[in-house]
Length: 122
Image (cartoon, rainbow, N blue to C red; front, side, top):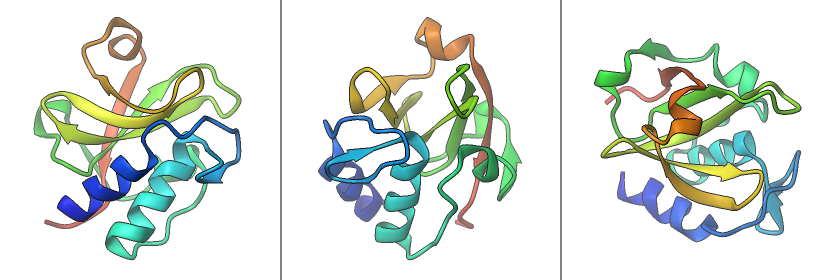
């Protein structure tokens, strides 16, 4: 958990770049891919749609640190994803503001939330 948080903190503020997966620019699934690779040694696809089919589906009230949350944003890929960190907050690569923390209860995300997946057994 602390390793995953360190990796996410290291990417805070990195600008959004569609298809990006590095410090010069990163997209939402790129962030998930980099965090899981660096913190847990888990290789994941660089596609939110593929990530949504992995792991175990879980209800919002059972969310735990590290779970992936998904939103239907009408973006290029159609899906947006982030990593849940507790207290109804998640870290993600926002198109307008880069890597940041947002709240699941913010109106924008609350109305677009479509589910969550747990990729790691713990």
